[in-house]
Length: 187
Image (cartoon, rainbow, N blue to C red):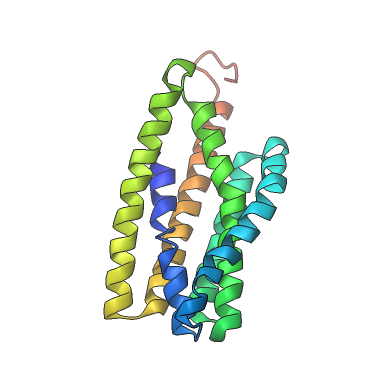
């Protein structure tokens, strides 16, 4: 849940994608194209990413998704014009394809069978609150410093989430590799 919360802090509301495209010159009448573009990439990538998650290490796939989110945030922060904005928006959709099904899979895998519904409820509660906080912070940054600060902060939270994922994986691996007091390895 903790990694999901930090990850969600990097993923503030998609309304900021619409605002960025508008700031880069997209007429308000065409604003729905932002979410259409993001969702086309998301939906086209969701099945291949889901199939990949059945074969690959969840840690590796989550790190790839976070790297794509970092790329999206950096494009949205620093690439000028509508082309830069739409490339960032497409990458945002790609990161969603890579991570959304995987996060659900991880909740299901780590929750006891008798508490899966509660686990999903807790995960969605925690990430929903994190999304609200992230969106408020993003809005304050946007208003006080500018859109680049908003997306740069998102990239920073994504880096923090990647570090947490990596440390968590290394800690789990070290725990499996530690010898027991009798000298035998734990599995």
